[in-house]
Every structure is written in C-alpha cells, then in structure tokens.
Image 1 (cartoon, one colour):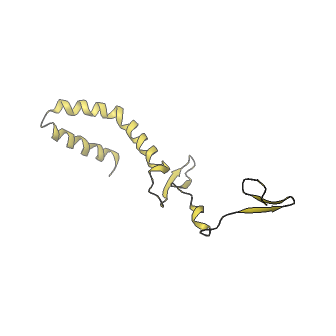
Image 2 (cartoon, helix red, strand yellow; image 1 turned 90 degrees about the vertical axis):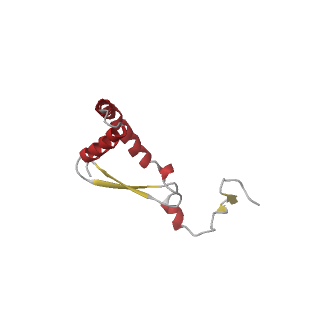
Length: 109
C-alpha cells in the first residue's frame, strides 16, 4: 500500500464517520496536509528512539544516503557487546608499580 492509497483509505474512513457531511471531509483533508508531515516525522523519530525498544532486543534501522548506499544501524536499550562478556566477571584490581589499585585508582592493601 503506497501513500496515496493509504490517504484515500483514511479519508474514506473519516468521511464515513461524518455520515455524508462532505464539507467536513474537505476540511479534514486540508488539515491533514498540514499535520501529516509533522506526525510522520514524529513517528519516525520515536521509532528510532532506543528507549522504545523492548529490553533485550535490538531494532534494525536501514538508511539510504545520497549516493544510494544503505547504512544499517541497530538500536536498543543495551549494547550488544554486553552479552559477549563472561557472566559474573568484573575487574577487581590492577597491579601497578606502586602496588594494587582498584578500578577507581585508589590503593589497596
């Protein structure tokens, strides 16, 4: 379904809700021309927002540049690199010339 078919379908649905008030349909189409680009832009922005992706999932977003190349991005709440580590492992301390220090740089005994 392309944009024109979608617009025809929406205007038919709304025209049916006015029960024959054709003037209301014309007013709606005029308002739709103003608000539709704004709504579509907001929908795309919210679709690309990582906070709207369910936890543990990634959403694939394809974008085309001016040269016709496709750029693929994955968005989500958590980085995919997080799942590559060994569970339960973390850095406790580092050994330096001055002795052991924790991850924030404070010396340990």
